[in-house]
Length: 126
Image (cartoon, rainbow, N blue to C red; front, side):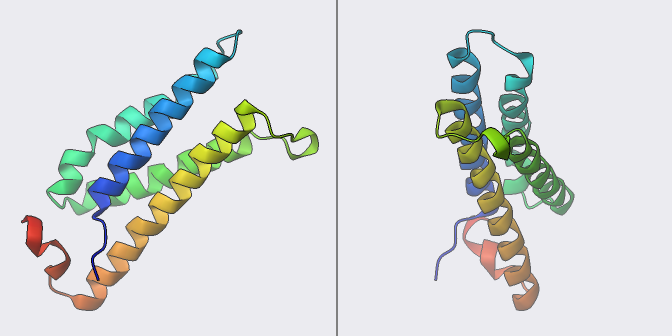
């Protein structure tokens, strides 16, 4: 069974944050600076991809924590009292779900690697 590597998932998640965040920013006529939080975190996560590819565990754990944090920040910007299916809420949901799925992949890979106790997950790209 092949599993996508964490750096690939990180890259995809970073691009979702950057693209969806920029769409949310430019689609809003007020151009609120808080709409740029997700794209900035996306750039930060994208910058960490190289170190994740080199299997730097500290960076991987930091990226996992940041991804969960960004997912929580984005999801909490949705007001459940006035929720409606508009562009803003759909983009926020997309970014939040993307972050939580990415974090689940990171944790799943970490658990799988611990169970195997030998770096066979990464043998193909070492």
